[in-house]
Every structure is written in C-alpha cells, then in structure tokens.
Length: 403
Image (cartoon, rainbow, N blue to C red):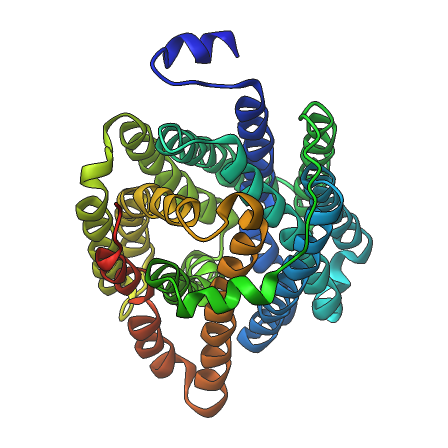
C-alpha cells in the first residue's frame, strides 16, 4: 500500500480506497477466470441460444430487484455488510454449479437467480462505496486503476482457465476453475472485514430519486445513457464468447481472445489513469464509443477466429477510452444532484435499474430474433442495432452540464 501511495504522490490514496481496489481486484480475477466459461459450459450442455439467453435474462431481471432491496438494507444497516452478502452469494453460485456439474443446464433459472442476487448486492455496495470513498480529484485515478486491475484479471484469468480446461478430460478442468473462483470470493469476503464500517440512516427515498429525473436534466441524461449502455451489454456479454467457442471449439482459444482483450485494455487503462483530465472527458468518451461501434463490423457478418481476435484488440482500446470518463462523469453528476450526500444510495439504485432495463430489453430482443427468424440471419442484424448502445450513450452525455 505504501508503494502505491508513493507512486501517486499527488493523489490522496486512503486505506479504504486501497482495500476497495483489492476487493475489486479479487472479484475481477474470479469472474475473469470463470464467468466467460460458465456461458460456454452451459452452451456445451444444451447447444441452445434460447437456454443461454434464459440464463442471462434471469440474471438481469433478478439483479435490479435485489438492487432495490440492497439499497434499503445499505441505508438501514451497513454498506460493507451488503458488499459481503454479495460476495457470499457469488460464492454460493459456484458451490451450486460444482454440485450440479453436467446437469447445470437443467437448472438455468436457479443459477441465474443466484448470480443475479450476488451481482445485485455486490455492485450496489461497491458502487456506493466507490462514491463515498473517492472524491472528484481521485475518481479518474480509482476508475482507471480499477480498470487496470480488471484487465490484469483478464490477462491471467481466461488464458489460465482455458489452459487448465483443455488439459483435463471431461469437465474436470471446469470443476477446478470454479473451485478457484470460490476460493477467490472467500478471500474477498475476508478482506471486507478490514474496511471501516459505514452505517447509514434516514429514509429510503427510491421513488423520490426516480422522480428526480423530471427535475434534474443531468440526472435524466445519466439514466437514459445507462439504459442505452445496457442495450449492448445484455446480449454482447454472452454472444461473443459463444461465437469464439463455435469458431474454434476450444476453451484455450477463448482464453487467448480474453488475453488479447485484457492485455490491450491494461495498457490503455494505465495511460487513462494518468492522462484523462476533466476537460478531455467528453471527447475521449466519444472516440471510445465510436471505436466500440466500428469494431462490430469486423465480426458481425463473418465471425472467424482471426476476425474475433482483431475485434478483441479493438474493444480493448475502446472500452477504457469510453468507460473511464463515462464513470467519472456519472459520479460527478450524482455528486452535484439534489441531496446527493443523503441520497447517494438511491441514486446508485436508480442508475442500476436503468442499466438493467436496457439489458432486459436487449436479451428479450435477442430471444425474439432467434425464435421468429433464422439465427444466422437475425443475430448479425440485431448486433448492429444493439451494438450502438454505448456509442449513443456517449453522444447523449455530450449534453451533460459539467459545471
């Protein structure tokens, strides 16, 4: 921790900020090891896009419901306890996957619900703690460094998981990877005990902050942007990994895809941490959004493995350029909104509600497209429409008044 403080002498790096980065890093490594491969694991068992969509749809339906509940608990109890609950449920998810084994595809709704509960508790608490622990002058540092940690997890996780899975017969490799993820989540739970307790008080005014969209133009822009962001994330989060596996029939190839994406992301996030200043945020965000959309056309009509690797490189550049300023602008806009200090939890809950509405709409559109039309023809067209979500969000936030 002292070395990190020396590295960023001009930034007020607190103990809680470093602990939150550590928890986020453990989470990222665990998810990068296993999450992509959970979708492939289920795909191998059912060979059905509908089943995969149902699993992911359950996640994004349960997650906002838990966000609303977690927001009330965070307001009445403690954000750190809510964070701990999230990590515990994520650990339970991997225990259940290990128990079900090759019958996991028969329990898609249960697995999706467990993951949705874990994500809901974890991300509500993590986002609120990020808002509380960081300040306007440390948010770009935190978001950039957290992005670098995510990329480091992405460098180590997918390629390691792919190597292990392909070295064992049957699904023994998957069992090992899911067990390692369980261990990492357990370490994150233990780390959370070192965070300072953050009790809260006051009324939980979720409905009032939702209505604030009518009164606060910046807040309306932020929530609408997150809905657009969700349109891309809902489907892309699972379709691309399956595309890679279908093109290669190899988990190691999927790991290589993750390695290229994460390696380039790590470099860009590292530079973003140092170089992105407030007056540059909007321009850089739009550049990232345009690159994200342009990358779709590399793979959408001919998703060969070579094209998918080029796509991985493009989004490795694009996501950091968009998300570092995008996240910082979001927290700054919330910080300047009505009663932000008292209502910070409600603001985070409403923001995540809109993000997940976008994800739900995205997956429902995906299910409809493959149910009513031929998947090979409908999926490319759908990806072109849904893939514009982040780009439209970036352009929408150009209207944000930052002063």
